[in-house]
Amino acid sequence: MIEEPSLTGGIFWAMRFFTDIAFRWIPGTVQVVAGTAPQAGDTPPPIRSITEPITTTDVAHFLQTSASADAYNNLYQYWTLWIAIIVIGGLLLSASIIYCALRIMQVRRHEHDMWHAAAHTVAAQDVPKTQLRWNRVLEQVHSENEQGWRLAILEADIMLNELLDVLGHRGETMADKMKQIDRSRFHTVDLAWEAHSVRNQIAHQGSMKSLDSREARRIVSLYEKVFKEFDFVS
Image (cartoon, one colour):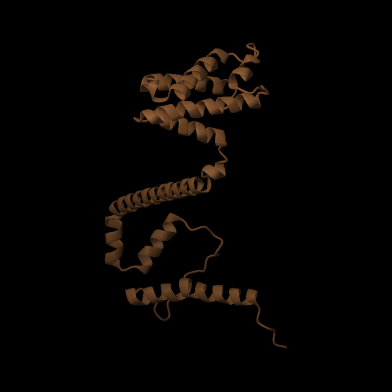
């Protein structure tokens, strides 16, 4: 009864076929071309077990018997040179492999950083709206526009009002809310009063209130100290 072909059997016969090519046909062809093939009537060398280890002497004997005399003599004469070439070539190849591996890692890291930056936009990071507003205040107060300085102080005062609401202080005006503050729990209340006072001058006097960049930044820094006491901004 003929057995049906199987994948395992196919792999076995394929390996056997390529083994015959590698270890029988190619060496035989090399011996025929080199003129070292055994002649008819010659006693074949004893067959050694495939599990028996091969020594350096065996390799040298194989090269001596399978290669032509000139080729073997050249190999023996320039053996040190061949070793140096092989070592140098191996080192260069190893260095190339290491360099390529490092470059691939750098490219992968760069791609990961780009993907991370694209995936973690402002919306993805869920930056609090308060922090975005505060960043805008800082941009305005560090600009060269006087109108921007005034807007920065006005916006910072609005944020201070919201902070007082968050802290539970109630009142019709900010002055009413700050009068309820317990100084033991609000260490920067005096700074808040000073900054709010300047804001009122800007709101009521308008352009009549003189304001330079240094003073504007000082007032905004007062608001910043108040906000950071309660981690309102970072």
